[in-house]
Amino acid sequence: MPDAIHRNHQGSWLVRILLTGAVVSTILPILWLLLIAFQRPRAIISPGWTFEFSLANFEEVFGPRQVYGAQVVNSVILVLVSTAITLVIAAFAAYSLSQLHWSRRTVASILGGAGLLQVIPPVTLVPGLFATLQTLGLNGTLSGLILLNTVFNLPFAVILIKFYFDTLPTELRESAAIDGASEFATFRRIMLPLAAPGIASVAIFTAIQVWNEFLFGLVFTTGGREAPITVGIATLIQPQEIKFGPMAAVGAVTAVPIIILAIVANRHIVAGLTRGAVKG
Image 1 (tube, one colour):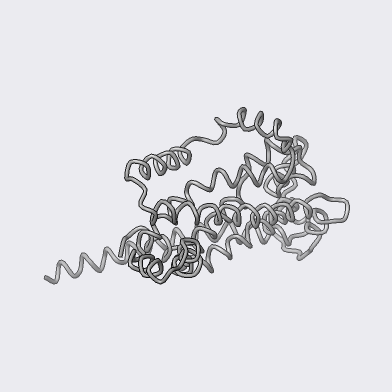
Image 2 (tube, one colour):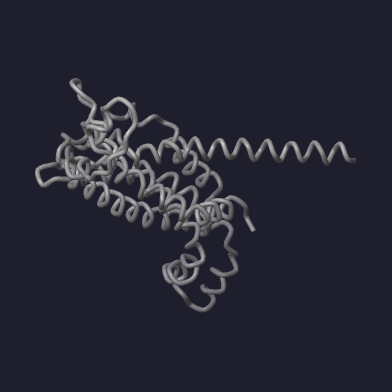
């Protein structure tokens, strides 16, 4: 018995050490990014170590003649609109698949197709998507990026919200129908509020995915003021030089807010995912 307790104690310490190492290896690059972002440019490349606090990097990339401020606004608009459209469509589709008594074969086919789209590398679909957006006149526009991000995030949103609706008692819908409520009224007034935590977790996950998206912004825009900020960061890597200070400044503005959002919303994300995965 004492040996078992000793082994468990050693195992718990090993887990703590591994978790501490994982946290440190995650936080250190972020701290280093912030340190370079607020460092004077000459101090970044000078030999030795000196810290000279400066906002010069931010002034350089977010000056009136630069496009990075407009690109940040593009990314914010992209996240808000894509996430909103995705949630509206996914909520209706998930409710239908979960509560309106579709056949199992139909539900399995739809969910299977949605899951298949998630595992296809987006880069393999670029030629077809380019031709489609060109035909629609959306190539090189923010509307085109909104459409693409909605399409590629919608399957996961539908699957997850559907599983969350599955956990809600069917008696609620039946009672509403007996009381004379329409299907839409039942969905809006009863089922949707109960599913709000799961939908919120999907919203946060979708927002993070859209904010971090790079491929579509790179391929389907010409850069400049039409591109999201993830594409703007790549332009700071040039053949002649790599602008470490400005890149760190843009990276801080891009990465830190979404990291803070993920940390703050972590409890809601885990609660929504776990509750939606296990039927109560």
